[in-house]
Image (cartoon, rainbow, N blue to C red; front, side, top):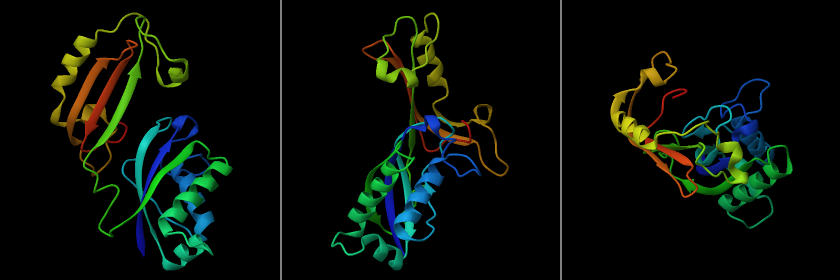
Length: 211
């Protein structure tokens, strides 16, 4: 088996999250369906972090394992490398079907000890908020909810500083049996950009379920 790393981006608006759910449109279902079409076999994906319904991703990392037979079918009669063939064909099958809201940024062959979930050093999220001071780019209105009135960014930043570091984030999560809610929040930054839109950037070793 040969392991590959896939870097994906997707618009989460019309997806019910990453993880497969019967009868629902999910990113994992889309990617695994595309992989099966181009390799002729079922391919399981392992993801760095499962996103919830409606959440977008700029650089989601996934790893897959392909057999020699799957790679041979993938390459076909071309003289392309497995990486190039996988990138080109997966892009094509996603764009041509109903999953045009997923893009494959890059594909790389990796060692068998690489794990998209456990090799990740951190994950990051960004939230955008607007208030009466903000100008929202029309192309970004779907990802920038507006709050009536004015938000106090200094107070938000001060509160954010209190939760940085190593903490038990149980009040911020939907706990799962047997799973820890202790996380290290490396960064939680609250600023206004040039259009006075408030951006909240978070970076942590990992995030809890629905955190």
